Length: 218
Image (cartoon, rainbow, N blue to C red; front, side, top):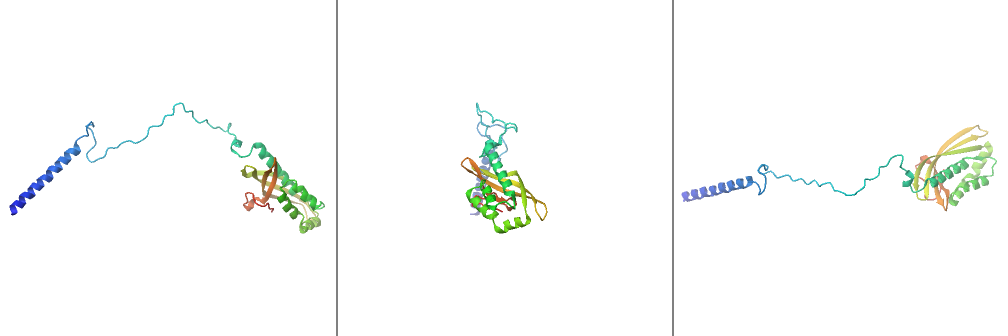
């Protein structure tokens, strides 16, 4: 009985060796139509999948942009003339705001400012500049302020609205002595018909980009 089992074991081992030999032979054979220099067995062939560059017959290259031909106003929502008009309005308003004298009627000062502003901001400014404490202080010190202004930068711009940072300078004479004050303001302007109106005024260092809600003053 042991001899039969031994023979069966030898036959099974011989079959395994034969199958292994056939497998090695098949793995070493080149594929039909393949090269005799195929890679070693067990190593996958590398197939290039890099796409060919697409051809565009008749396509024109994008035109080059040079500093001399680049016009920034083609990329802005407002024209050069509109921006210039708004800047002029911002400067003239700031000059008017920084210019006053103790013997001027406060109501006249308020009306002067309303000529630059939206009705809503005009009401707020009129309330501020006619405050009794402010009026009495200027009269007691005989304060005269001569203002000047310069548009410093554009902080924000959109269709129908623009925010300038404007530097205001006040040269003040008073009984307490002469002074020179300088401050930056964020002046928001909005289009009303064909005109620009000051919509809001904020200290530039207060982090305001220009209020689009109710106008406020410093």
